[in-house]
Image (cartoon, rainbow over all chains, first blue to last red; front, side, top):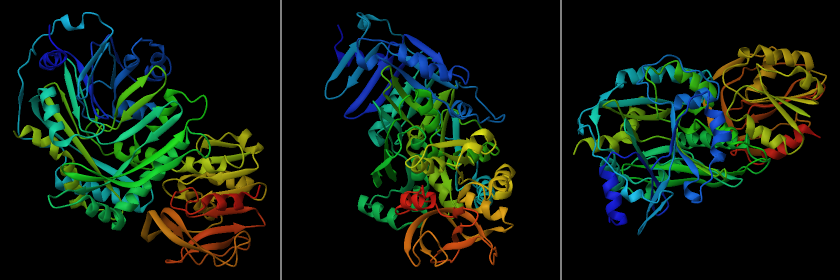
Length: 403
Length: 185
């Protein structure tokens, strides 16, 4: 019989649907899905408030639904309609109920509700893997600059204070998601990284951003705002000084901190919303990020749906104020964001949850791979710099296609 | 009871979070006002929000209806809405203050705050009050130390108050005190 490691490798090489989620000290692999629910604006609330609490499994870690909510679903959930866009008709949202969890730590531990999980047949992928090196970009620099000028005017008029312009790279590919994911982790492991591989699509992401971490009645969010291109000689101390002294980055960050305090205040007890750690620097392969951690205690009788509606879509990837800024974006974005700036994570039956913001991601669907990136326009932004920042954010993902 | 008219801002609930510490607070969107609840409330607050005061005729209606009857407090856009209701011009300013921390000074015209006190406050505005502005009852009671732009108003006759900056921002030092003073509950 296969040992744990051999078994794990066998399912990685098969086409078995699975999810990998980065956790402290390793990764959790979820598989043997008993149930799969396609979410839409009609069943979303019911799913969050009823369905999630119904599961009872003797294995605590499997007492959950895990999956993603797309950007459009999250907008519709807060009553913002998205106009007709160019679209892949990808799933608005999908959640899975796992029956097996494989914990990759120093050792590999497997817990399953199925007695014979090791004997389950796995099959080889039907389609051949291939990928292109080159990508098409939906907004070139001149189109980007025009949009930038358009939004700068809106800022002067006070209609938005900060707005994130999104660009999408795409090409024809059918990637081996698991091997891409581990390659990505070897160069750019991030705290909210994840993979979903299903029969007809895959998503890999090295997201750095935690949107919701909820345990009992304590909820934490860690918004990121502020990016610095990392060069070889640069130190974390240098980055820290850069952010502190840079007025533009500070203001951009301040805005996001107040916005996230606001979103938590909608659902938290009076006086309980506090800034835990203000303005810390996190280091990644190609860049540094400026991060703040905010915490609150939930009011009584707050539902899962209340929490998701207050916090999603995450403000740091849209701009501020949220509603009007999404409306401004919707008027200009021709391409559906699909998963980008949606959210991935899980809800446990006891109400605990963890969700990220889906950024730094590859969506592979219908033999098309797409990578999106966005950066903020505030009043002092320069279009050239922000255009370049989008490229830096996408770079570690684009590089995967080069080797 | 405090009634907050929300202009769909992403900072409104920071304000609500502060207010709830002093009195039960009811919040509705500006396009969805509960007139019955509003009638019962002692204090009306105009929240911050995007755009300019002329975009919100409903809020102007509330101002005209209740000025002099109920205490009215405006924050940021809300501050501008009160001034707009008093026929002031709200105009773009050269330097835009979004996420900006500024030194603010209290003036001798203030009935609520000690004069010549300087404190730090968070600002989110691209528009400002065009001056000179004259009113028989409404006084400018705080200004930005650097730019001299109007930062607070008080009308003790009609019980109308406003801040251009955000007492609710984490950038404002002791915003809770400012709110407490202006609520005077």
